[in-house]
Image (cartoon, rainbow, N blue to C red; front, top):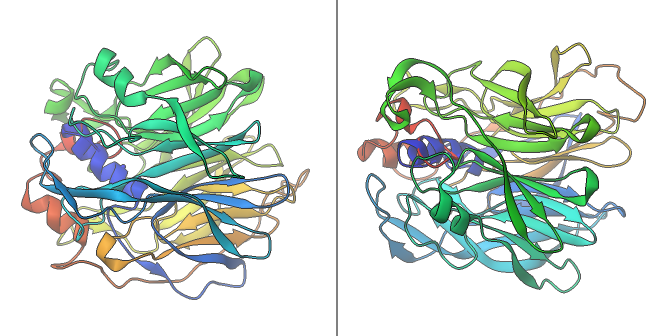
Amino acid sequence: MFARGRLAARLVTIALLSGLLLVSTVGAVGAAGTVVATGLANPRGIAIAEDGTLYVAEAGLSGTEAFTPPPPYPPSTRGNTGRVTRIAPGGAKSTVAADLPSLSLGGNENAFVLGPAGLVMAGGVLWLANGAMVNGHPPAPNAATLLRVDPRTGAVSMGADVAAYERGRNPDGYELTSNPYGLTLGLGGNLYATDAGGNVLYRITPSTGQLDLVTIFAGLPAAASNPQRGGKSELDPVPTGVAPGPDGSLYVGLQGGAPFPSGAAKVLRVARDGTVGDVVGGLTAVVALTVGPDRLLYVVEFGSFDGASQPPDWKPGSGRVLRVRADGTTQAVADGLNAPNGIAFDRAGDLYVTVNSSTAPQAGPQGQVVRFDGVAAAGGTTPRARAQVPTQLPRTGSGGDPLWAGLAGIGLLLAGLGIGRAFGRRS
């Protein structure tokens, strides 16, 4: 979920979102939740076709190619292990597109994997927010882009080059880092994408791939000054999830950068003219959101960060999905999740969530898709009891948590609030 200060923070964030930080695995699923797919490599975004077929973006397991981004980032690895996977209504898995860029900051023992993330179906084509550019380091082919994927043939083509826009214009004026993350289809047929590294929202014309800047997000209040934001007392905003709102507006989730304080994240409403206002605050590490068939907003919190633990880490099984009621209050509808990320509903209002989304490459594919039935049945707004998904949390990597061990050693994580932007570019 990270960039220099921003990326670092975002890296942490991205790690968050990307599943970089904790790598735990979901154990037995409670009666309210059903595992519908396993063996996924850091699953992020999820999309559902009209026939009930699921499509999942897998950030992958990095690779063996070594590369060294500009300071303060550590020697890292990358490869082409990202992919898009199809899950049929009966549960059968098949690969739609493979060989997509995947990188692990700090190497394959760390859970800081960046790769395929946001996913949306538009006009019979899958659009994919893919990969990252770290502090201006030349990205791998197709990284830090929006890609078109033909779900029938698996053919992949360029949709929009986000990295090129960032290098050429650098809208927020900070580190040249890009991490296209959230993706949605808005009114009028345009696509909208968040750049967690660049702290911006883009509009994309599907027919041409034209990329237009909608808004640049301001930082979030912080208790200490952040050198990565010009010494201001603010966190990197780290925009992650995006979903269509009423009257052509958009909902955008801000994860907030390191040290990921509880209650610092929020959901914003971006009006058609680019005006930004708060929808709901007091959230923690928001990584995805969507609107259900009941027309209510649902938000994914990645988890709660424990900065006092040694090493600092995400609390196991602390992720959840919240329903935002019409009066602005929230209620947990799925709880006890480990590193949840993507979210989607089918027509019946059944909720699908990707979990175990942040695993070190050396641990292998640990991700799952879990279904919670009837959460947002159309016309029904009666709150459901919390759905508990127990977790078992064997750590992966050496020396404690893989991400924090690796990043702490290079001063990336605890370099201050400037690191707070996990997905974004600076921190």
